[in-house]
Length: 122
Image (cartoon, rainbow, N blue to C red; front, side):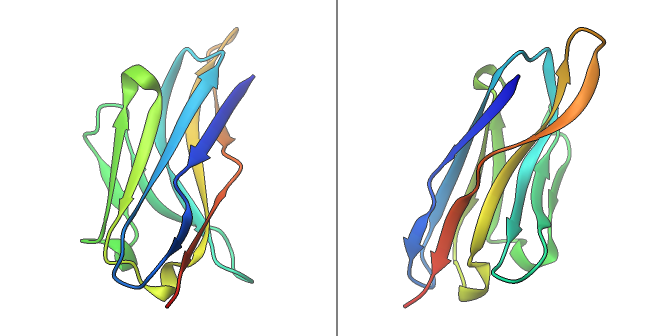
């Protein structure tokens, strides 16, 4: 069993900042990619940012480039999303995920956090 616990969401004014955190725990042999999806009201869930285990490759959707920064702490099995210059269109439920290597057969599966609400409004 693997669990991901998120924190850091909330209400912020346009131009403000938030930092999301996500910690993975459980029976984990290793974690490959970690990242964040978001789902605005009434819309599909899309990938926002992702980071590899060695932090050698970062991905950002075009709409957040230059404003969001993804990072991770492998010793703590944590991933973060620093969100600056927030816009109303960033309003969504944000979901953490991790591609986890699990026993006994060294298989990789994607696990999800519970989601945290980010609301950007005046």
